[in-house]
Length: 293
Image 1: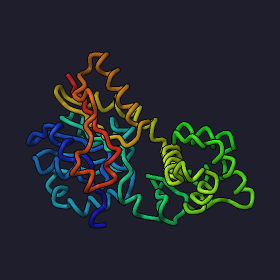
Image 2 (image 1 turned 180 degrees about the horizontal axis):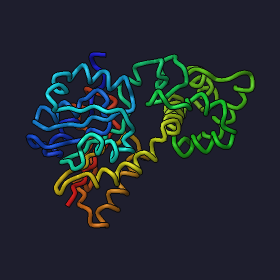
Image 3 (image 1 turned 45 degrees about the vertical axis):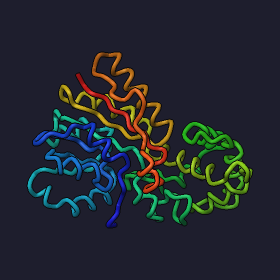
């Protein structure tokens, strides 16, 4: 786990945070601690939040000295509860907040977590291993109509109905338990010229969003985050697909209309050519920034 996760748009995010010595910041999606490390290097004090014990364990070891000297506080929790998590840890007012909404490289590269369309593993997809519902519960338990609606809404998958039909037919012979079983079912019914891997990726995205209630978490978290910011504090959000980005864009507009602050990115910041070449997972990322007034 030496390279748990490569943070995208790292320099751009940290530059926009305007990190100041001794000021408090919240990394609401800790992951491998990339953003947290950069904030600490600039003299900030950080509260790192994550639902995943793997992430917390990795950063606890990686940044042990920063924890010991009181510059870093780690806590387990969902960023949708950022208000209570911040209050409980003495971060009532902060100078900046980071949300990196993407799935970490560690999740994709760990087959037993079930996030990847390219590796054999169980249909799990839980960010928080304490959650009771896994992806295979949805695949094997939802009705044909519910599956189709989920794939269309959360995956924006044009062949949602066809894939849902295929899943229901396949599970009649026995439960679908692995990632590769599901990918195989999708590949049999999606026309090759349409790009099977794209459909599989979108199906996995839909399942992951549903299992982790990701979109509702963003909607809950953003207003709480703005409330935690001191005047001049900045909220930076990196999204990885249109559903996330649309929520961030529209909520930032609402905040501005309410007089809470101003949007610093009329157009989202996207990775440069160098980053795109070095990290293919950065290709869909977008950074939006809001400043409280």
